[in-house]
Length: 479
Image 1 (spheres, rainbow, N blue to C red):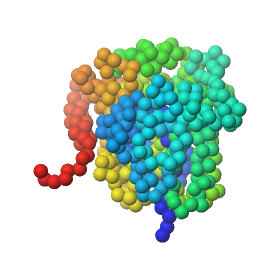
Image 2 (cartoon, rainbow, N blue to C red):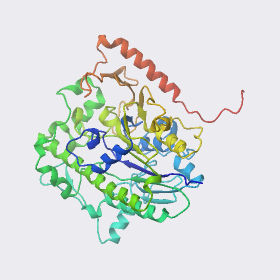
Image 3 (cartoon, rainbow, N blue to C red):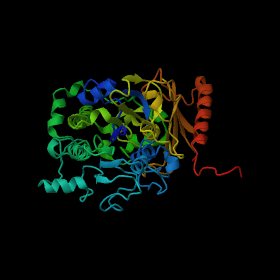
Image 4 (cartoon, rainbow, N blue to C red):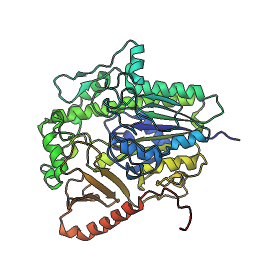
């Protein structure tokens, strides 16, 4: 009997869709992910289910929406009743490992002294590192640094308030994640059991702190980098949450990332640092892909690449993330490859990250878990169909602690032509014509010419919210 396929599941942190060469970015250097895209299916319209880490991650690992997993917010623990797809695979005979960030439980050092609390997640190897900065000094990455005679350090770049110089490539967290992945695959290559490895590096999440050698490539062409997508005064029509982050800085309080106080050079330097972090990840993934091939594992390995959510990067006058459902925050790269099994193509159909878990199960021949709400992409990957969803949905239910009075409860429905964002409890929202205003700078919510479209989209959003109710527990009888 043929061995079930291995799975290399790569999730970067806070990476926008438009940060790879294969997605049209002419500045980054991402040959390895570009090559992966050319050999698999590249999704142009993949959307996360929350623009914040923990809710998004809890969603895609279970195939269930944030409102269902009860992990709706950063700092909230996923329900112990949830069944991650990695646990299902473990029970089916897979050996599962992880290096880097998981974040489906509170990770603030005030409640997380060594590593985040775990449910039965299925990982036999769990090399945990929430991020690069030395907030969790006993996490596996920092333990490794000390074994190498190193301590985590960073320093401001020149006179920048926003950009830092991080660890050299040899001792970087992304490099450590790659080392751990190669060790795991090497140890499992000769085994009869199939394996899954979750590569969850912290890059390109802030702080913007690439190794100096990666930043230097951009310094000679800094003036060529485009400025953020911002239309002067646009925040005035976008609601309180955007106005707060514009006036007070990222997360409604980070003054050093207050867009309106930053010079054009500041904006471009942050973008350069962010791109440099993306380049570093690509370089490390190249090492990983080469090892996969040299170990004879490539042909029988499904490779999944995506991010948990995006990054504002100065667009709309804001940085980082928050209750903002622009495409730069919720539209993510997604590439799935399996040599000789998945036909290379590019698709514009709508998909959601909640669809990944049921896709994995169908790909390896396992039944879909009854509680899963996502829809398998398998027939799309094999070419049996070229359509999947007619719209994508995103939830943000008070997902971060920095906006209060009122707290943000925001949901989104995105079609190819329009995007509607409802600000619940405020009699306010956002409506964008995505064909004529792909940058989402002009809010049409109160434009009478779009009243009919707004009503239709509100009805569709209402339907999605209703259909997203938890399918569990399974009905046992008629009454």
